[in-house]
Image 1 (cartoon, rainbow, N blue to C red):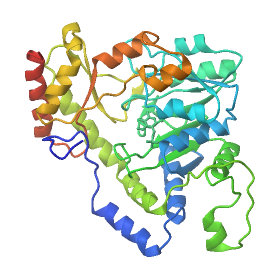
Image 2 (image 1 turned 60 degrees about the vertical axis):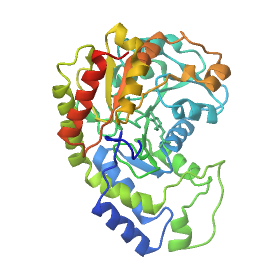
Image 3 (image 1 turned 30 degrees about the horizontal axis):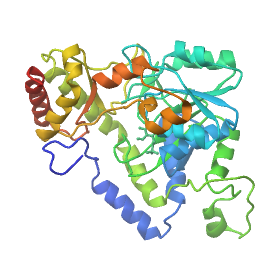
Length: 385
Ligand SMILES: Cc1ncc(COP(=O)(O)O)c(C=O)c1O
């Protein structure tokens, strides 16, 4: 995303309401976690229909807390996907546990339940599936596997706030689900996240761990009563500031309306690119509903796939913001070295990566902007060399 772009990769939908919310929080003079965070958590519970929500400093922190709540620790294995952002695997290492990667489903972007089953050992403690670009993982089958093998599921919902499976929002089926509010996410506040769970004991534990293992929040300590507190566990500094929660509350209120806009932009793309050969749009699995987080397209023609990087460069040169979601983790130096992985280990993830591009996508994108992108792409694909 650069200002020189004719079409930015992403533009956050921020306006007067967000500005007013920041002013309100500033006027209150309480900048760290306080009443705005508490309301944001309540409102997220109501929005998703979940019992507990904890506002934290990032999606990464939310994932880490979910794993800690599941008692993931040294000696444990957690099965996850290589087709994700590095945070997903990183948090498993934070716990001293081992990420065990399972390939994605052929032609898809999410973890293959059959591959999960193959990777289960006596040391497996949890499964960490990831929704990609708005498309949920195969939650029905993953839930069955988890039940059968008595495993916990911590879901990475960074891309799937607003997605559904069987009409049920993502956030309800897993033991814990982590959402990210990073500046390009569907609900964006710059940096932040939320972990939701139906388990009260998990919530209590995550809340304490997110505040240095302190048994009372700062609002209780300074705002209401008493100065005394205890440190009851090894904790982390993962709380969210009230300034950001104030923006988050506005974004949540606008969420349904912004999702409608995302869906409309997605529809424009599909209609305006319908005649472009050698290109496909990922679809949610039967019964699932997308969160419309990214506009990913997949090249289907082998010659075009070979030219994918040139196509991306040509789009950039023509002023179109692009990205690639994702470079599989086993192709990253650190992950390959640390876990003894190499090219070829996850062929479906590699095939997906080689053929995929993310195009500009944001709720306020106009039909003319979409047309500019699809016209440019059509032209480039005709002669990518
Ligand atoms: C799939 C996925 N998981 C986790 C994260 C981490 O979220 P955060 O940047 O809020 O820590 C991201 C962020 O981009 C992500 O894309």
